[in-house]
Length: 104
Image: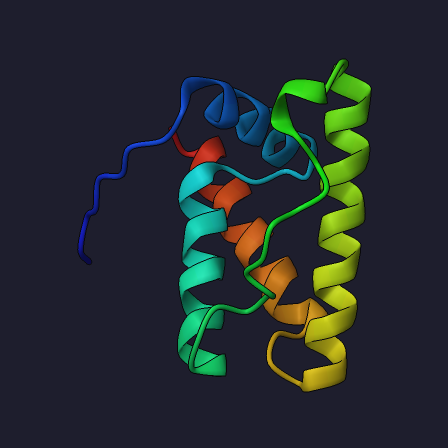
């Protein structure tokens, strides 16, 4: 298994960690899911464009979590429509993460 290192803005990392934690995921599992989708779809699995959400505007943990849950729901829907990532695949990733977390 390969290991990678990335640089990310502290604020973005903190918000990402909060959202992923609420979803029962960690950064490693989320990025593995992302990488698998890149391979399956032959590109970035979502539109890459200027967004409407300004990270600096995020004012509360609840908003961060709500946006994360909305994004996950949208990704699940898109994946189910394209047949690229099933709910079973997502659940398997979550189970693997939780098992890894329990064994630490």
